[in-house]
Amino acid sequence: MTGFDFPPPAMPPGVDGLRAEVREFVADSQAAEGWRADSDFGSDWSASFSRALGARGWIGMTWPRQYGGHERSALERYVVIEELLAAGAPVYAHWVADRQSGPLLLRFGSEAQRRAILPRIAAGACYFAIGMSEPDSGSDLASVRTRAVRTGEGWRIDGTKVWTSNAHRSHYMIALCRTGPAGDSRHEGLSQFLIDLEGDGVRVSPIVNLAGKHDFNECVFEDVTIPADRLIGEEGDGWRQVTGELALERSGPERILSTFHLLAALVHAAGPEPEPRLAEAIGRLTAELYALRAMSLAVAGQLERGALPEVEAAIVKDMGTRFEAEVAETLRRALPLEPVSGDGGTANAPSLEAALGATLLGLPSFTLRGGTNEILRSIIARGLGVR
Image (cartoon, rainbow, N blue to C red; front, side):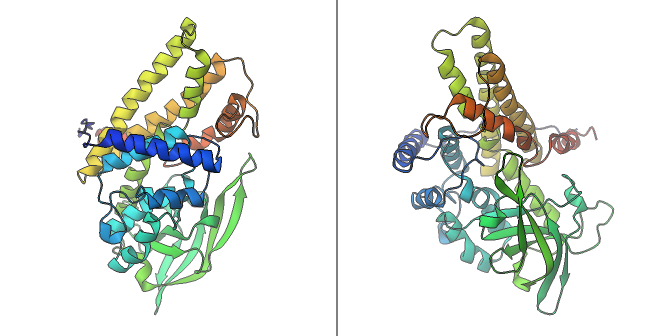
């Protein structure tokens, strides 16, 4: 039995000053731009906010300076992300590129790929979509059917990707494709490719959700040809790359703070002397958040040391998304209000009914993005040696 570990990291000096700097920046931005606060990282897209964040050096924070980065620690990055999410800032545009696509290219990409793309990501001017999910595959990435076949000039790709968030507004996608036999494990013969969504002829069609929003897309590859140098890393190394990506995707503060604005609203509505039942609920949720934050920080500390804590990240994501749902349900039960759809209130103070309505509509997606709870528990079981 291998088990898991959440060692508390030592925070670097100066993080309190950094935290205060981010808070001031966010407050000034909201006052000037009037964006609506929502602590779900996928709630709002603002290219101008991403560019302003890049200008402050808060995208690509841990990357080498030669690629546009700032060589700061993963824990300093954690502080910035935590403050942005707690304030409900519109971070969606650069989110995927900063969190996982850029680090993937930094680790596995060619020198030409790194020099061409990473500085643009760090400037908040280059956005990525994730090309993993496929029709009828659910969360079973090993069942990928999109194929990439070598040609004289490079690769020809045929297949379909779905649930590709913001592919219609992104510059690139990293697509997982089958390039060889699956083998006994089904994890062999997979490779990842850098796809130019503006120039490679991929057909991007909208998938409008039940709330009437267009975030998801279907991306169809039909005889799409790309140069040979778009392969990321070595052929057949896709599964190892994806595993590393998902460790980055599953463990950050976004997995525990998507409903933070509702928790803050609940505390505000309860006042300084809440009735006992409400005080108990707030105390329980606050204690859970504190514990989850400690676990998430521990994973960030392990990433800082160069580890890939796949099991620990899966635990944070599984427990975190369940906590986020619990916040919404607790608020719904505790206060005499009816959730509504649409806008309400102001940018600085959206109505609680509107905030709750938007959260309840999006809540099912929280346990899907980054891997379903069933997949996560399978990873945890393997890590514990019980499967």
